[in-house]
Image (cartoon, rainbow, N blue to C red; front, side, top):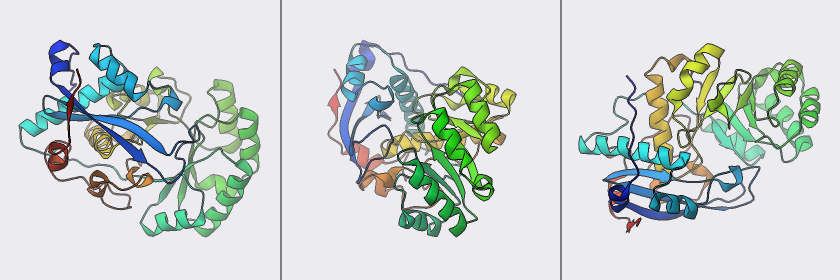
Length: 332
């Protein structure tokens, strides 16, 4: 059974909401639309339930400051609504003294690769990953050469490439036209290869005979993508199950490349999805993004590289001792 959690935004709630601002730091760029290496977010504490607010303004989100101001004013946003849902879910589990991961089967994940280097792929293969998700689109000629080489070196690996809609239909048509049959057979899917257009996407699918995945806009219920990439930080995965079943689409649950607490929420939602009628739709997920950033006390609780999700100890989403010692400040 799937339970929905809601928490109305009002003055009493604002009085009971506390925040802690954080910054994640990466060694290099982690998104084709962003050159940043520092990423601000906030953990929120609502009636002893915890959640994460981690916007990506490059993808259309409000800034952290704007989100917090919206919360002060009682206004909503999809990130705020989902953070409130997370806080309620977490609070109920903490009140009952149980971990949200108890008895939960969290799906395995792909490795998220932002640096197209031989060493990065080799390390991920040694760590047991069977599927790689590459952040592509920066240099298609180089990426074409490397992908061909890596398929030859690691023929057992499957590849997912996320272009973030940064390339045109013509560029992606040419890219697919240059891939050999051996490479095309090892591609799991291409994510947002170009801005969505039904005719263009159909043409790319027929040319490469590879599945296409859509990230943003998946809640519209369109049937054209073969794969829906679902971020629990933005939407409830359960909202997509009926449409995905009808359209024979698979679901890939991923983190929002956010704080480890947010990663845990995504992992819990992926595990909860496995316990519903949507279970047959769930493919290998993308829940392991903490190693894209500098280590923190929180990220160390999630362990090292490997396709399996290592849940942190504690009640709710975990991290009990770390959350308690943070210098929380009242939202209002």
